[in-house]
Length: 598
Image 1 (tube, rainbow, N blue to C red):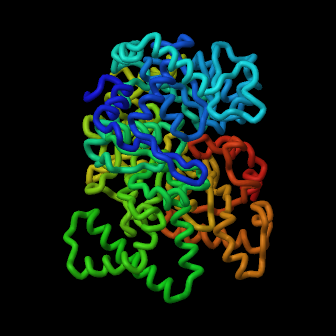
Image 2 (spheres, rainbow, N blue to C red):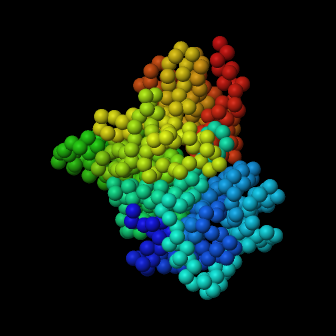
């Protein structure tokens, strides 16, 4: 490996690119740049501050914060001491935060703002190991008892460095490649969270293998908005960018991503499929509300783009005529879309959940590749990824070099290599169940490697629906197909041990705007939308249209509307935006049962 540990990787940029921009953030309406030199100095002060309160090799430090450059600083500061970072989603409820802090035995916690400090205050008497608490943003009412600011931590660090100037360098040298780097609690759609232990080796291996097949350059700029608590953003938008000396701009919020893309003009972006679904939905909605001429031009361009990108995918020769038509399509249609995402994107990265193949093809046709990959928290995370010159829509690409994958007799995907976690913290039985004696990790996903060497995921093993008639159905691809519709935001299939399939549907407020205007209707909320006459009939038409290529036993015979969109706050979504199937089924049990009362 090129580096002994992740901290060494970070600090190497100060030597090689001292004046290069490492991070960008927006303040008072303007974007500010931070060089690798300035970033390294801040990381050293935070690390020294933590050392001054007794944080040392192996100790756990928790962070409860949204994305910002301080998150990156704290991560590298903790890692340079050989300590272990425990990321906590800022959307979690106090009792969930309490579980993670206690289970991980965190000695210190660093939070973003008053919202998060109030959570800690609420559970403080139940915290068994937390001794020190720090807050990044000073609350208007002051920090209060038991709290110090991040600025104070840095001041403590500056004093510590004066007293022990060689401490940090010596500390970093002692951090072994196999030392624990983090404990990431899997949000999980069932059961209590499990803390996956990932080492410096896990991340360094994953970063190096990914970098060997996906070109990332020091000139690249990542726009970061997917939570850094999510292992995909931590690896791809944080460690991968750092390994390649690229810059990272932190979006102001998830709501400003579109605006921020236009401002900073990123060349690489990491996201879960929801962003791509929304962009696709808005484009199609704009086209459908446009003039007949504009619609005709758009769909002509889309047809040309699809033909072009599919020939590239199949490695077929591009004729001069097709190249001419593709250039014209770009000039008339796709160039405008490219400018809307900043005009500099080389590729998007998608992970965390399956991407609808039609949406991947749409972006590919528009000249903006989405490199869909696959992995889990426990595999740090990347197992496979589509490449710029070796991709296939509907798959998660070829397996990374030096990563082993095999398919079990029942179709479950198994993987082995330096990317696989050490185990689950405090859960020896779960670890033995997940990793066998030969080192194979059981992913829980069903899939296969196709004739082109591409890995294709069918569904989660536990999600497979077996109807009372004995038919096996993978619901996830069907749900993704529905969620790709501009009229449907979310969908959950029901049918296990039932005679036929039904669904819980969340219609799209945004997608129904044009329909409402054309039919003289209006709504001010989701609750009003689902009560409008004609909405259920419109969704039924959409479901029928999207089900054309499904087997009869896979089609949705009946559906109900969810009372509200699935959210993290309602416990129906995990922090990584996966639907908690059992929670939704429980919440709507009576209505679901009623669909089967024939």
